[in-house]
Length: 338
Ligand code: ATP
Ligand code: MG
Ligand code: FE
Image (cartoon, rainbow, N blue to C red; front, side, top):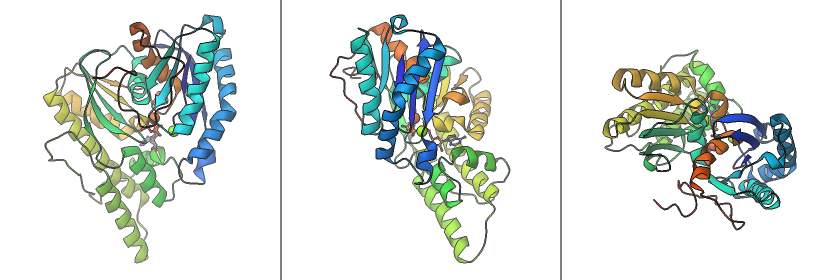
């Protein structure tokens, strides 16, 4: 059984051997946060408390399992909102203790990567591009259980910027899916900046793009002009995708791998999926593209169960003193210092 409650989704899943989903119940709080334009931590915690027991009940019912059928309990213990994480961690610890099951702490980002595991096994060495609401990272994975962040955003995460630019266009939170749709109806007419493209590293920066976008919209507003939302979206998306594809290509050149894994909420983006695919086909024909299924890109507990299986095999368990770690660095498990 696995738990995910790091942000605004309460989720419980039953996963068999890390790759077969028996159930994956996701209670989203999006409607509650919409009117605030983003996630309100206190509201999130309260919803998690209200929902978690129903999620446990439904996940077990849907999977047709009893507590005696479970082998382990896995949970996201960071990074995320501390009050939100605590609900999942407390629920997982309680079930593990009551039913004498091992407790497996999972890093949320490892979960986003292992969402792709439900397509097929990960083959090493691999590289992962994780793009989500709070993260944009290139992760080198030489072998199972090992990884190294080789590039990350210096400021805003890609998903965060999607939500911000969507907001100024009047699109409610989370804006990513709608901006993606609009982008396919417009053209790159604004030519927004591509930051750090020439920098000799694999890092990203999206705050300049965000400012350019906001300035363009505000300026038009001041002079009473209405801009075409589809073209704005297409131009914004082209800039984001260009930078992500460019830096991924650079990373793959320096670190040849068997698979490129794409995960995280923004991995559902159709423009990003198709451009990465085209880049791989052209420049790295021997690297397989393993994308998280679109349904599993957003936060869910199945992906946590997928990642947890790696630690289950290695017996990397935690005790009842496991705590939520909101600023958790990308480590596989407590004590697994790289
Ligand atoms: P993190 O995983 O970094 O802790 P998070 O869990 O809040 O952050 P996710 O749930 O993984 O983030 O992803 C949510 C983000 O994905 C939101 O910013 C949302 O707008 C974005 N998103 C979802 N679908 C798309 C899409 N099709 N195109 C672009 N962005 C998208
Ligand atoms: Mg979310
Ligand atoms: Fe996430």
